[in-house]
Length: 98
Image 1 (cartoon, rainbow, N blue to C red):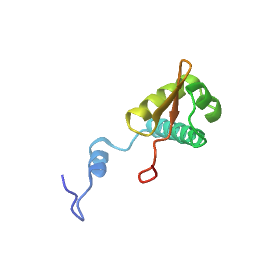
Image 2: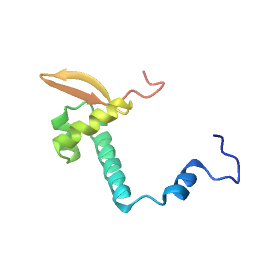
Image 3: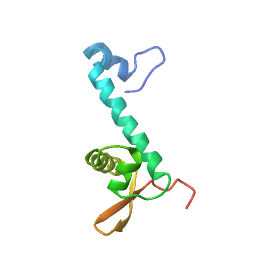
Image 4: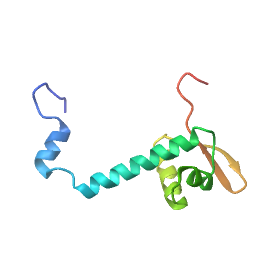
């Protein structure tokens, strides 16, 4: 589906069909985005294990694990190395900086 000027986009079509997103959904998405931002900030200092990310980002270790797993799936973080039985996660290298 190609967007044509003056025609509704996909998001608008969904809103028209189903109504606006619930406040609970909007709140949950904001919470997840804030957690991802905190994790990225923590990893900006260098590779960290899940417990280190949790401490640096001030989030529950289980939430850190699930968030890092999802972020890895979508290429937002990478596995860097292994520290004992823990994997160290890092931000992926930027394009052109290798």
